[in-house]
Length: 623
Image 1 (cartoon, rainbow, N blue to C red):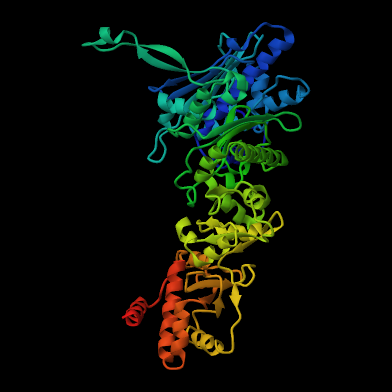
Image 2 (cartoon, one colour):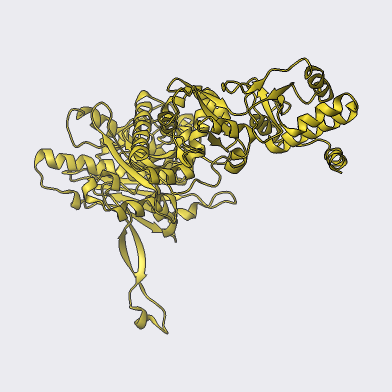
């Protein structure tokens, strides 16, 4: 028995117990090693004109349930006794990496292994491992045997053909771990499809199949025979030429990838070559995931390195505002020692940036040239784009502001900011918008009536995030956004000067409503409406409602309130009545003021704190 050459039991314990998160990873690592061994012989065949083709190679997996043994075999380059000693007897020595470094200037080299530790993941599930190998062109075969950190042994063995057999003696099952599941066909198939589906060579599982037809097997015990079934796809769809792939194939791949029963909204098949090499297949689904805005949702693309799955969800590949995107990226990246996660390097960031730009370009092109289709997309994912403008303090607003749309009252359709600005009336200074629970409620707002009467359009903002996002956009095409409920809408002669006769009336109303309103004004912008609420400052009425509705404890700003201004139509009959009552019945003036405030709150969808009193006052003054 020989001790491992690097360090000791502590290092191997680290490899087995700390580096890998999931025990099932061992199968991926061993299959990748087999693929590397075949690649080496295939490359030797090309360089030495041996005459072997890819069709001459395969990887075979056989399960012996009776003896709890799993065998993984390849017919690749194989190893001599010295190579077994060097590659398996020295932890963290990678024969694949050495081969790759020796041939780094040559093409057609696609070696997966880098660190020389993947093989030792097998000890997460095995209490003994035998590696029988015969190097190509050699007469002798040899065996490497180990039961873990205690050491290993290399000795002569018998093997007729070149290649390597890895014989895994699985650990006994425990209450917490069922090691025997790695002998089950369904489990092996699942892991191969998940992690190694795109290995270049056939991965075959030996399984029992009926030896007789179903008719012959009726009424008697069915006999079985052994057959090899190829499990993996080998050639990834994304590595094929676009011209070779049908729309049906793209759609079916999406369904297999995501388990969605619907076809995707569209796909983007792209690749880059040069300083950065990668291939990507990106999909936009037709519907947003139900849990998208919950803490349980996990965004990200599948990440492959040379066809081997490295991460199920690599969130670094997609920005949060495109979190609904599905798909994958295949490239050669700097991986950490276990290959389970990616080192955060500039190459990964560059790939992510390229993908983000391509997605935006496709969406912008659709918005400009296929508006009905883009509207379909926006109805499904527009909220996510608007949240993207708001998040990160508006850092991404320039990337997203041309992709968001809002309903235009004047044009009676969804429009972009660019559409709005192009249709602005001559001399119009602002982009006007109204915020509310629905388009209908915004249309019926008294303030909207005045803006529309001036020939200006009003955008309807009905999502809670809309106004917050607009604050970060700030201006578009040098036009400032203006809420129709702002105290100053920029429309001339909308506020009436308070005369000396009106001042004591306004002061009485203001005193009566102190604590609920910031100011009282006489207004000329209300048309047929007697009253409305406007605001001063940054917090609008809709923002106040958002803060009010936040779950208790989620934020400490639930008491944030808008500075409300009660605007009264000085030309309305209600104000005429107030003036007639002021000298003789100031108490009634106070009560009518409360009614007007309640009416203005109802128009805006704000709560009335004392509804019983409001109803009683209304009944009193209409009877």
